[in-house]
Amino acid sequence: MSEDMQEEAEGTVKKFMYVNRKAPYGTIYALEALEVVLIGAAFDQDVSLAFIDDGVFQLSNGQNTTDIGIKNFSPAFGALGDYDVSKLYVEKESMDERGLALDDLMELTWEDEDDDWEEKPSIHLVSREEMKTILGNQDVILSF
Image 1 (cartoon, one colour):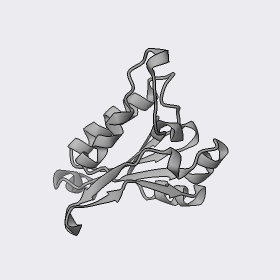
Image 2: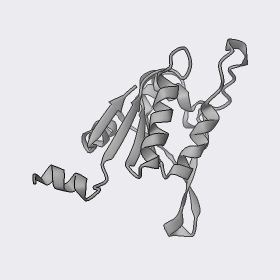
Image 3: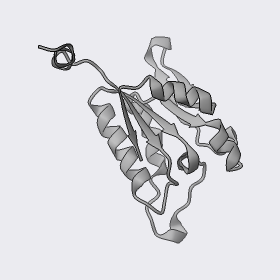
């Protein structure tokens, strides 16, 4: 049996990175990505998300979709911590290019059971260079 097949047979956890590049509304990509992330996390994979380009708008505070007649799915990001998804990487340059600051994003947290259930931030602001390194350390990358 090859090493890859043996690792899969033993249930090795893979690192899955979901790259979000699209604005939250106007296409189905953002909602589909979030649904796939929740499914992957439910199967105990090491799941992380990257928000690049217009994808940074997916984490914007105060999203209101009433005028466009689409369901606002942004509250579902708050459930990511319940699925042990605690690594949301937001590219700083994409934020800067769109006039956004960290304060413009939702406050998403997760509870660290190893640290007496202390709440910790899920959003990590990283440079474009850091993002390249993070992406390079993944087993699987899915782009939306």
